[in-house]
Length: 285
Image (tube, one colour):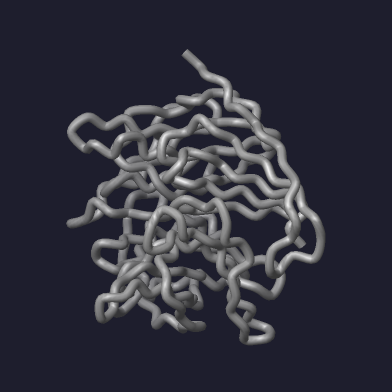
């Protein structure tokens, strides 16, 4: 049975990094949402569910960009669905140790590839070459290049500890991390300069701050990441301004374990695993 999603509208003053009053919405009714991606007029949301591998109940929801539910269980029975991307007429999702691709029209599974010795695939991202995409493996610190024909190989020479979110732009594959160093959570941001030839790459790092980074996107001259925080109440969105070499938080309230988010124009959608919501901001500039 399909259930509707309640939409709550409220207005708040701009926090650091915003220039004016903005409109914020909350869409509730999800189950540990992990990622938001778009395709045309629609959004897809991956939901971890209970996280019980013995009885998998993860699912993907389809909705409009206004929050109207189209199909809450567009795909169901997944083990640990997290990052998603639309590629090759399919919605791809990192599901535990398997990458899956679902036909956007029929919803049938058309791609399934199990990657070695992992149950912690975090994100998928197109490499815009028509034949391959990237997958992050947080457990082993690897980023794979996966071809639509099922071939794959590691993109990097050495592991990147706790690699999580991926974003491809202008032949750069940006990534963020969530790791522990000397007992403290550390989040890092960097990129790989992707070549079309089959070659392993050396990462370049922009910087690091205390945190557990999960999602990443690039907007104008800035790199934005979601920081899950050290507890359920300290989530935030953090900005790395590469033009001015600055780092600063832009949203530090009501983000309970934020995940892989989406910026589309001046709109932002961020899933919050801890309270089962999608936060939607209109006019983020």
